[in-house]
Amino acid sequence: MPCSRAAFDDAHALSVLRREARVAPVNDKAGKPVGIDEHIGRRPVFAAGNVRSGGDIQMLQYTRKRPRQGFALLIHHDDAAREFAYEETDGASLKAAREGGWAVVSMQRDGRRIFDETRARIGNGRG
Image 1 (tube, rainbow, N blue to C red):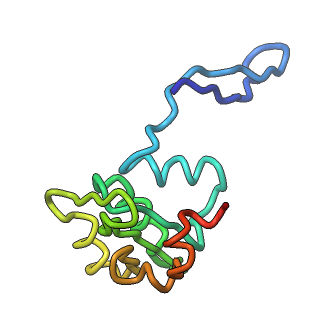
Image 2 (cartoon, rainbow, N blue to C red):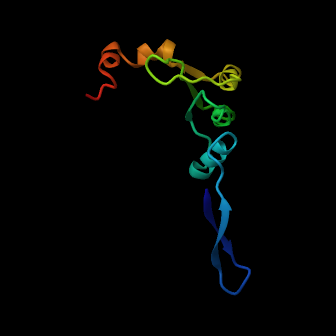
């Protein structure tokens, strides 16, 4: 995705701001922490990601690293009865969660604590 950034240039008689064209980081894998830093300028105190393609691993690692550990949450979509279940073929996100000490919510195991049975029977709870 193209974006621009202003740069101050005082090399000539007039000081000006110049727009520099550049490509924005891809919002996946290693590009997520870069995008976070560009938007908020610091490590987040909380980040949540999904088990799917390993695309949230670096974001959650970045959130969890010192000097101040943030809270990293990984959602494991493993309940085909109540939602679309999908798994990573290599299990990279769950492995990274174990190694990094992230909180993992299993939609199958923990879902009853999240969605009560009344809502499950009537759908999404909106109607």
